[in-house]
Image (cartoon, rainbow, N blue to C red; front, side, top):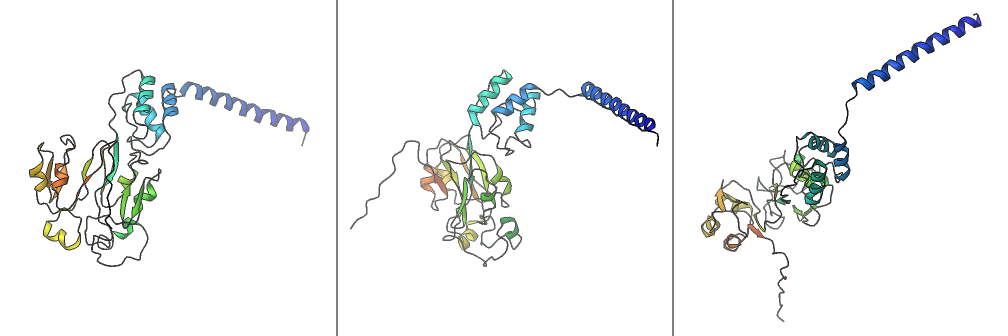
Length: 278
């Protein structure tokens, strides 16, 4: 082949490639979507947990939504008030009140208090276990206790202790991953300031609860009658607290014959010292 023909072919192909490259660069410049600089600044101050508690796929998606005005500046439960203040500063708005919440497991049916229907030897996963008659525990509303919530938690804030999941307040960031993973819907996000909550959500009557759980709510209404603020009522055979009305007086907890209403010590309260005789 003539060398001149080869050179000409290379030049033509190269020229065509150059023209297409220039056209693509021009098109990219014309049709480029400008990214809001505020979104980048917001993402920089977010904790980077990508937990989805804000209602978006991750921190990047949430930052873009805030910049567009589609999401509140105080929507990051992990970052809480400090992050909300920074985002508000970027957006030039007020952060508003940030109500901190924490995950709570509405069950204390551990191995010592619940009757087991059978011994489960299958896959160590809650969703797999509930396919076998709702799980091994006699209580159909009880914690399965195989740790699916613990495995999902990115903060090591929830563990299975003696057959029931327990939340560590000092580590919980209220990301909500454990809430979404629980097949029994037993984990709820409640105000962190709330010192009383009901650790049972069984809808059956007390007659049946007594047959398989020592820690279950029997729907006796004593807590409801004791409350001075109309903040607790028996709904579907178990007590439910209205956190907007509750004053944390603790009267309901003292009255509960089953110890189903848990009381968290007041901040700064001195622990009781038990004196053992002998």
